[in-house]
Length: 412
Image (cartoon, rainbow, N blue to C red; front, side, top):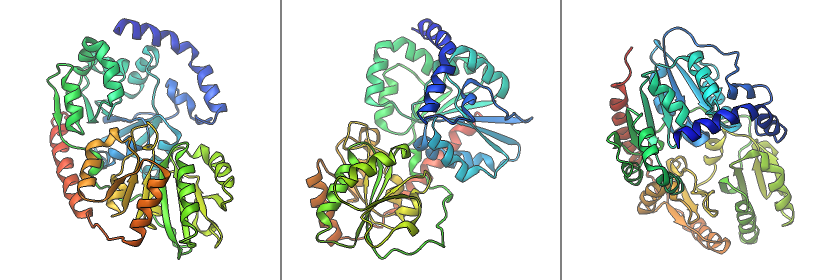
């Protein structure tokens, strides 16, 4: 399987320019920086010790902010962060754009030709992959160069686990290239253990770790005297369910405002078109100043503003959960002491949701009717769960354990 993967990715390399052009046309790639994915970049490595952090998208990036921040305090270290998506780059810029000790690049495609160029250009001294970022060519290249490799907040989704089971020996070889795999859940540890590795440890989910603020509330924006419901990280069909819930509740709560923050902002016009069919007044914006008295729903069209809007509400639906996607991270919402509504598909965060359910802060819904019923109940009987301090203690413990483990592999 390893040889087949190497051969296929070697061939695929010659079609990547066409592939990137198609994605640019579809507005899924940066038209200026897209060549970073084939290791063509104006950015350069400086002399000294370089840590490479690689993660896929926004959630994975935010989960390792605390680790990145810890090493940014060391002036002898420079940091390279690679991510795959446009949204993750926007979030990165909001937090780190003015810091010269850290560089962002779009992640290289995992082809032998590109990866060899990437390692030659950047010469990382240690590599951190986040969550389920397991790329054979990158991992094997680092191993061949005797570069320490660590998997942070490691997880294997049920879908990935079932796929890798067919290639158990190959997966075992790849996983054994890691110096250590730090798992976010006991379930993930059991999945990694299936492949007979001896480098797997359960630490806990880094998403519990509180990080420094990087979003600031715009004081020029007006204060809203509205009852606010937030639909966060929504996927297709979920916005319509939340909008229909708004339509029903509007009769009883005419002051109700729903703020939809979609997982992919390129869908905002599509979402607005769906909402307009319900005869609701909707706007696309990222500013509260755009909201009028008759605005029913605001659709946020910018990444990185979640915290600003969460401060406005204690009632939040988290998407990717009414469809078979596996859910989105609920911890940021829990830190806000908000009541969380979610669908049945939360297997990516099973242990976290179990804890939040025990703390009586999260509630499962299966339909529009469920959302209306439970949301209406909580609107009438809201009690501040005040669990932030408990979550901070959990996060601090996970952070300290993680740093102790990985510091063993950083030799300056």
